[in-house]
Image (cartoon, rainbow, N blue to C red):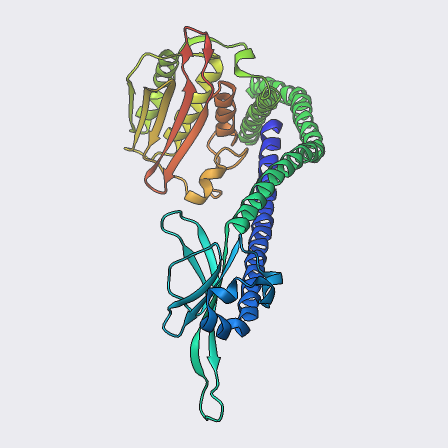
Length: 436
């Protein structure tokens, strides 16, 4: 039980930390990527602006001017291997180019992304419009051409990929370290809970054990008095019966609490290590059916059984009988007259499925998760059935878990309930049970 609780706490802790790391890493990646491209756009803009004064010279002299590197004003910020500058006239005709990059597309004003169809390489461009104002003429300036600065995005993409893997690897390493620290923290967090629970279990077992003696003495005294009716006043007969009934119910409650305390203490023992023997599940269910059939007949309930397979499991016959008797007694108790209760057994892969279905009062959807709580009852206004302790379903669940199984509940109000018990079938080849 504690191992499962520790695992869940550690899992939740890791999920939260992984989410935080993912959000942090994504934020760093997005900000870093945006800054890289912003810096690239600024470099291209600066390069294009620095080449603007040379537009007239390029238009008039072309490549002769561009080959005179020492004369160009943008030589100190230009990298011919990674960048290119192109000059176009007002109609988009190429006038000159400096650099190794050749896009072969018409200029578009502003920042653009261009991908070469053959190589798939991505380039980022920034195009400026060049205007001139005619001397002595009013009106807006005239467009005389365009200047486009281009640079490959390969360097930034490589930096992006490098950052991505750095964040992934560092995030995984951080998560591993967080997991180790979280494991230690969960151990420390569970220690007081485990100590309190063990103390509570010990108190339940001790109190149940200590209360057996006075209850036994009360029961013995009542039995002695009831065996001599001549000494009992007629008015006290009902009082003695009430005392005897209450004593019997208290004894049953104590026995159930002791059983649950032992089951809790045994919960950490693996199924294979428990003292279980091969038993016929069919025979156990048949005995429970025969035992409760008269009660069903008294209530005029249609009580049916159907065993579709011969099934053997590793189990404790007494405990298994109690498990299925509890489920059948509940079904019969809370099913009205002329209702229906069915008991089915069948195989499903490597598991035996026992179905107890009734047409009783049902359970509200919001209460299904509480059906196995100790002393819980679906209808608080309903009086306790005679001999009932409110621990029957909790005991059934403890027995199912002890055999490596579980109980699944489905129910609808005023329609009925179905309890499915799923228990591993005996593996005769390996002599072990399959874990649920």
